[in-house]
Image 1: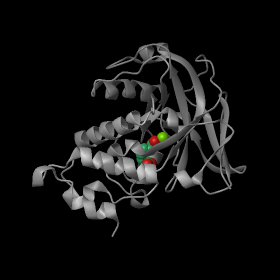
Image 2: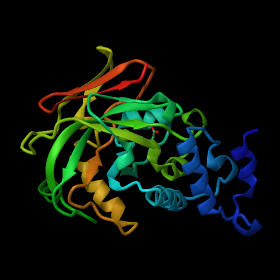
Image 3: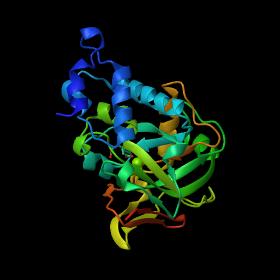
Image 4: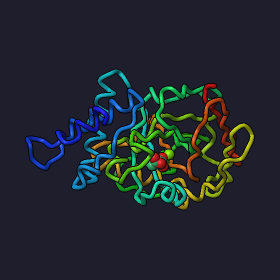
Length: 273
Ligand code: 0L1
Ligand code: MG
């Protein structure tokens, strides 16, 4: 039994049945730092709520900020049917992005830093003006400076990528990295663009941007509303990842993953050999 598994019975505050959120935040943060999977929290704490999950996420991100990481935006998760089906969770969620997660377009990622990394095809928004709370589609479009092809690296800290919605929220919505292609004009219609993700030129996933909540701008609307619930906002310069348009691809050493999005261009990353 792992050390973390042994610790699990002691994560209840003051010997009661209330989970000690600070302790859980430390456990999930250390799992990410050490690239070591942990048992799903809700196995031992089925009473954990979605609010607990976001509270744990906030606390675990605070640990990263204390180590010097800087928040650069947010990601929306589980915004397409394909993604929901892949992990068996059907609730849109969000997580925070930090500068330490940003990878170079055309660069490399070190597989040793991850447990079981997957990659997914997305669209990223660059925020121009503050966006928060309930906003209209027009408000959301007006707040965008630029749009880019992007890929997210997700790496659930839970064994075998198995989790309930509360777990995955606590785990920063599995977010582990992002790679952004060249920023493009907001004049491009992103409602229904073909998205093709290849590994060493073999197609691994393909779909349409319409699979992201019917239109990727809806992820931005959802993001503005969800961050407001915890007193945050989308601020100028923030990056917002709209969520995977298809199921994610499990990465293997040595391969180069490329995403081509019709009209938006391409972005790539290689897993070190
Ligand atoms: O970005 C995503 O859609 C992933 C959210 C978390 C679920 C997963 O790990 O696939
Ligand atoms: Mg994603």
